[in-house]
Image (cartoon, rainbow, N blue to C red; front, top):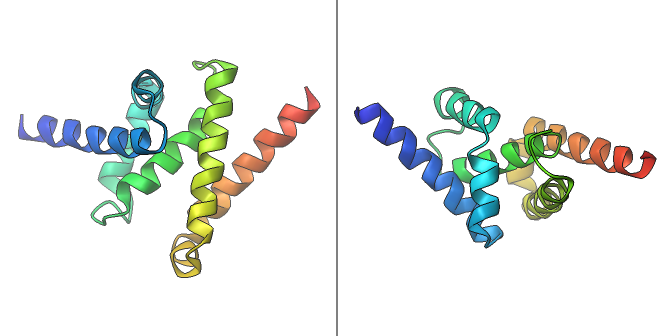
Length: 124
């Protein structure tokens, strides 16, 4: 039972991090409560190298925004918001070169996803 409470607190922190950036609780719920995102958050909570650090909610929101851009469970509008929010987060990360370099593999992957998403949007 204690583990369930810890998991819920963890999800709540991620949701609070996203809501701080985009003040629409319905959107936050749609993104954070997607079954595939809940599974990803569980894995990140257990296995991410940064999971005990202060930056974990920031990094996890980046991750689920990147995953949500391609989710068939979301509307095109929600996917566009995810891409925009992720772009903002990547810009914020770029303002601190040491932070970006420390997490370069993650940010490079997210930048690539954003680039692919933008290219797909132009080709439709």
